[in-house]
Image (cartoon, rainbow, N blue to C red; front, side):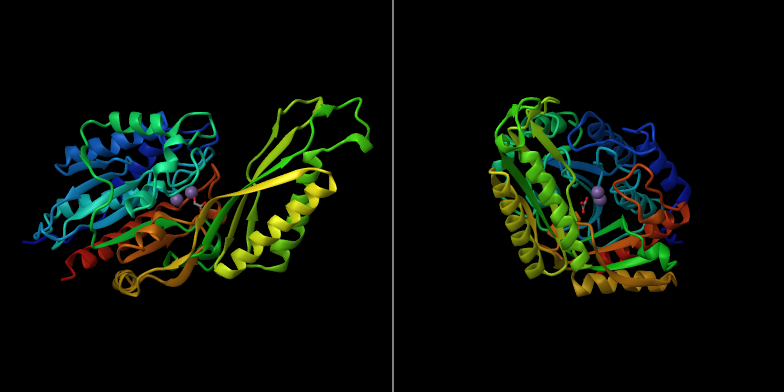
Length: 414
Ligand code: GLV
Ligand code: MN
Ligand code: MN
């Protein structure tokens, strides 16, 4: 008798709880930033669970983690399913973990049923998706798809740690994982993720079939003025980069998003040097995260950011330098893989809609080398990158069921 592979909802929810305890914050979120001790613990737990089930575990030179279940034809490249285990500094329990643990649950469901797939299936936990400790994000999938990683070797993180050392320590912390070169042929990729926005919840839809991801650009704006005494330097003598930064941020927030409802502009980090209470700063540096579905609008918005920052710096007799630290053009997913996901949703009779992702994901890069698609589930109030991020247990399990059906179909394609 052949068993039908079934998601074990209790097991999946228990795993989500167990992983949420690694790096848990007092406010109920997680702080499990890339390459940290907490990130290493989560990777270890996943590897131990995998080895206990008899799966093979690999990691590549970028610390991407792979868990393999063989198919009937070992010569075929594997189908990859997964997401990431790292989090924002005040992140939620589901961003990344849901997709990674649901993928592992799908692999276990196949194993429980002794079901045979044509292709091997590998669960992947991409490294440093978030990019908050070490920018840019999606490092693991970028490296996997052939990005030049040379410049990352000298990267210093937001906490002063060096990427090279942290990467080496992360790999060394998991000697049970067999080493693998970075990048390999794959048959396809499917990623389950929370929407991180409000639309599915608002429309009471349990599933979003993601057809594309909008583009992202990260800028680092550094305004240089002249350090001076807070008490003795009169207005006429000041070259204050903080005044220029505040004016630029105000002008940009007052125009970019109000004039274009598809645009997103976020200043998430600002630092003043030397950062002394009673000194006019020598320089102020802030980040700008820009998103837009249309590449030409992203170009135009970046040009506007440059113009405004230049003008406001000049008005304070300061100078400005702007560095583009990340450029991730948006992309559409493979129609074939979207159809496989849609068929899985249909076979489970689930209401759904097609949608474009506002957040970036590893699937965006993987789509450059193989057919890829994503499945979204709703999250409460659309909250994400927030410790209060929450997914209804039933929605998490539904997402995993769709992932399992889609993976079975994709891994059986001849
Ligand atoms: C992903 O974490 C994003 O910022 O879109
Ligand atoms: Mn994520
Ligand atoms: Mn995220």
